[in-house]
Image 1 (cartoon, rainbow, N blue to C red):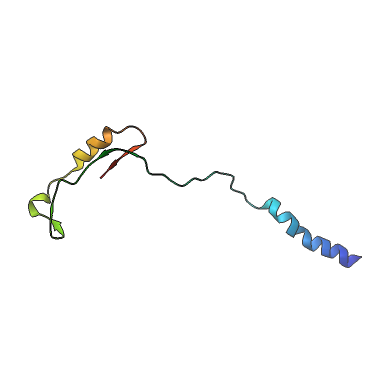
Image 2 (image 1 turned 90 degrees about the vertical axis):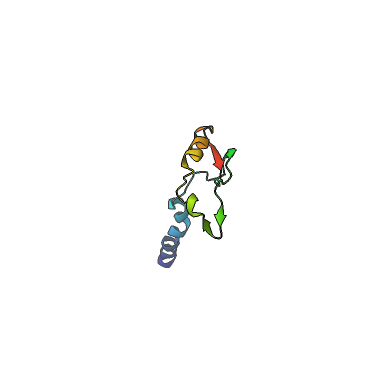
Length: 79
């Protein structure tokens, strides 16, 4: 009788453990690329594997920022 009680007490945690396990109840979805509102093509040319010396100081930041500013919320610019 004592062995039976000991056995029941020892296996009880096995049956109760799923009740105490941490559960993540969030719904997780894969990220998705935003809709494209503008496409900007490169304007600088390479010579070999690098930019030409004259093009090294030309920044495209203003053109990229202007395209981003004209996009709606949740949309992106394809470079």
